[in-house]
Amino acid sequence: MSIGIALSPFALDATDNAVDAAVSLGESAAAAGVSSLWFGQTFSHDAIALAGIVGRAVPELAVGTSAVPITARHPLLISGQAQTAQAATGGRFTLGLGLGAKSFAEPAFGGSFDRPITRLREFLTALRTVLHTGTVDFHGET
Image (cartoon, rainbow, N blue to C red):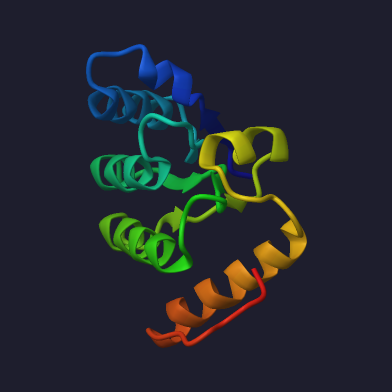
């Protein structure tokens, strides 16, 4: 059995250097026998980038995001970030995505939260296609 933990992004916000703090926490987690470390997304540091950096610095850990909201990001941007993190970690990165919450996403990003399941389906269709083929030509409803 493997044990993983989610690192509170707020623990990183309180430090002078969130990257150094994340690497240090990753090293401590690995030393304690934790096998994976998961990063949540906030408005401060990028969870995908942090996961890639920590995974590269601490090769004993699998890393991932828990989760990155799709509301403010394009599938091509997520694809590039995820592929970079996957390369940096030697294949130990897992991408976790989420819709976010309407009460949070609409005021923060100014877009509509209408039809969230359709938006997620279309996002995943475009993301999967570009990850598997390297190209995508998708025009959805949302």
